Amino acid sequence: MSSAFRKSARKVKKLLRNAIAPTSWNLHAGDRVVVRAGRDKGQTGTIARVDRENTRVWVTGTNLVKRHVRGRDGRPGEIVGVEAPLHYSNVAIADPETGAAVRVCRMFLDDGTKVRVTRGARASGSVVPIPGGKGRGVRASGVGPADAKISEARRETRSGSGLLDVLRGRSGGG
Image 1 (tube, rainbow, N blue to C red):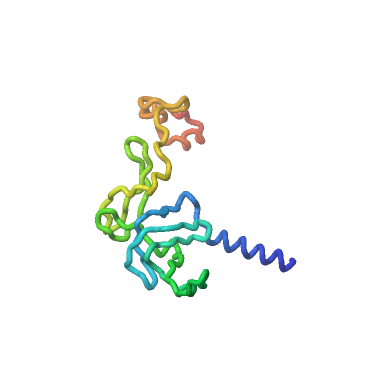
Image 2 (image 1 turned 90 degrees about the horizontal axis):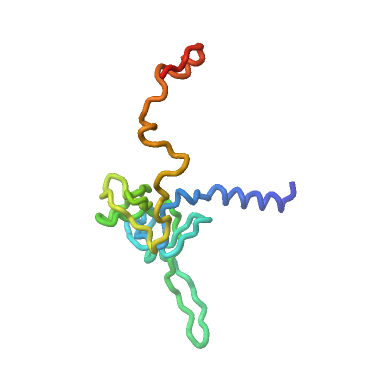
């Protein structure tokens, strides 16, 4: 194998190892989160930016690093504090009522709206809205052409032990 091919294969392998399925990503820009690990553990902030490809998030006011900025147009150079990215696993969504770090799951409301709900020991079970109104709205509901009627679905269609009876040559009954 050529060395160029090996290098590109390593890059692809690294991207795949860090990849998270889009369906399992629960963090969005604008969410209030608690830092769970690192030197800023316990601090809260808002997610400013999300990089799903590299599984990184930027939280305002946390994980500050020093950057040297070059002077321009007669202005002297300076050292400024800039937020560095955190790995997504080092932050957790803050409960809207208690402020504690909690997990979230997805549920559908009665009207079909998809929402995130807090879970865990210190969770209040409240709904965490997706900031900016992003996300899927109302789930399709109603009866389609392939849906069975409720009365037909509740009716028992087979009695006995099912597959064993058929294999033994007996009728399924019913």
